[in-house]
Image 1 (cartoon, rainbow, N blue to C red):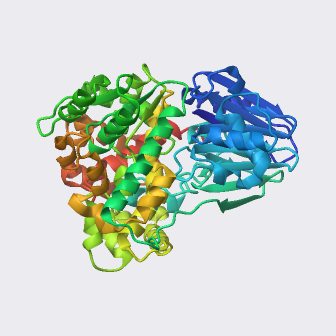
Image 2: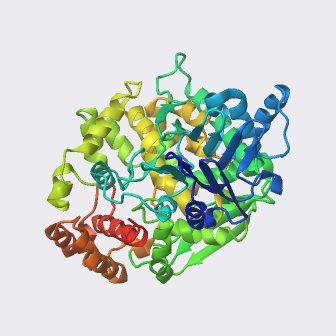
Length: 594
C-alpha cells in the first residue's frame, strides 16, 4: 500500500525532479517506510512505500526492469500474486523479489495490456513501457485505490491524490460545472473521470488508460459487472451457501496475503462483526486484533456502539482495543481531516475514521473493514423504498436519493454555475445501461460501480492511508459481488435488507447484533448542528474567501442558517454541512494553488 506519482513530458523537455519532490511531499503519509524516485528520458516516477508484502528492500519502488524496458509504480495489494507468480515462472520468467510488485510488472511483460484482467485485488498501477514509448495506467474494478491525473500542453502527471497534483502546480482550479452539479446532488459523489476541478481527472474503475509520448490517450474498460439473472436459478439455501463460500474466500485472501498482522475495524454492526466471526472460525481469534471507536454521548444520541462490539469480543476473545474520543477533538481535528481528503466529502464519519485510524496504526499496518456490504446486499433504507415505488427508473431513484433537486440547485448557486440537470441525465443513462430488468439490481449495479467509489470507498482509503494504514474491504471482492449482483432482489431485501448476511451470521454473531436496526455510525459532535459546530459553519460561509468565490447565493445560505437542524437531505444529511464542507475543503486545499 503506497502513494504514487509521476510526470511524462510530452514537449521534448526533461522532467523537473522538483515536480516529483513536491508531489511526494503530499504523499508521505500514505507510505512512511520508504521513498523512491526514478528519472530517465521523458519520464519521472515517485513512490512512497508502506511495507506490507515482502518487507525487504527488494520490493522498494519505483521498480525498474532493464531487460524488458519497463518501469513501475504501484499502489495496492494483489491477492492472487502467488498463483500468478507460479504461472509466470512456468512460462520462463525469473524473479528477484518475493512480493506482488514484481509480479505486476512481469504480468504486463507477459500479457500486455490484458494483464490487468488476471489481477485479483485492489490497485492503482502505472507502467512506463520504454520500447513502445507509452504510459499504461490501470485501476481496480471498484476503484478501491485512487488514481488522479492532470494534463497540460507540456506534460501528463498522475498521483494518488489531488493534493499532490496541486502541489506540482499548473492545475486549472476552476469548477467543473457538471461535477459541481453531481457533488451537490449525489451526496458529494463525482463519478469518474470528473472531479470538481477542471484540471484534475481520475481514472475510472475497471479501466486501462494508455498515454503515448505525445500525450494522446486511449481509454478502455477491462471488466464489466454482469447483472443478468442466472440461467439456472438457485434455491435460497444454494444462494446462501454460495454467498458464504465466496465471502469466506474473500476474508481469508485478505488475511493471508500480508507479511504483517491484519486487524479488523469492529464497529458493532453486522458487517464488521461477521468479518470477525469468519476470521475466527477459519483462522483462530487468539491473535486477532480488533478496534472500536466511540465518542462522548450527546443528550439526543449515544456516542458509541460498544454494547454491541463488546458482545463480539466476548464471544471470540479477540485482542480488543476500545478507543474513546472526546467530542472537542472531533471539531479541533476537522482541519486535519479535510487536508487528507483527495476530494471533499460530506460523510460525518470521515473524521471518526481519521481518528480511529490514527490509534489503530500504532498497532497494525493492515485492517479489514466492512464497507461495501450495504451497497452490495441492499442494507440501506432507501433500497426497499425504490423497489416498491412506481414511475420511471429515474423518478424512483431521484425522489429517494438526490440531496437536492435541480430547481433547488439553481436557487443555491449563482447564475454563472447554472446549467442543465446534469445529474438526472447521468443517472438515467447509467440505469438504462445495466443488463437486467430487475430495478433494484440496476440501482445496486450503479451503486457499486459508481457511487460507492466516492463514498464510502474513497473515505476509507483517504482516512486510513493518512496514517499509513491499509484498509482491505472483503465485501467488495469482485467474485463475491459478481455472485450477489445476480441474486434476486427479494432475497437481498428480505428481513429489512442484507438477508443473506443475516442468515450466514446466525449462530456466529450475537443475535442482538444481527437483529438491531440499521444505524449510521454515531458522531454526535457533527450530527447535531448547534453550538460550536454551527458557529464554525456560519463563520465559514460568511468568510471573505467564500463571498469572493461567488458560488452560493446569499439568500439560500441565510435560509439554511435560519433553521439548520431541519434542513436535511433525503438521506438525512445536513444541507448546511454540505455547503460548509466544500468551502472548507477549498480553503484548505485549493486556495492559493491555482
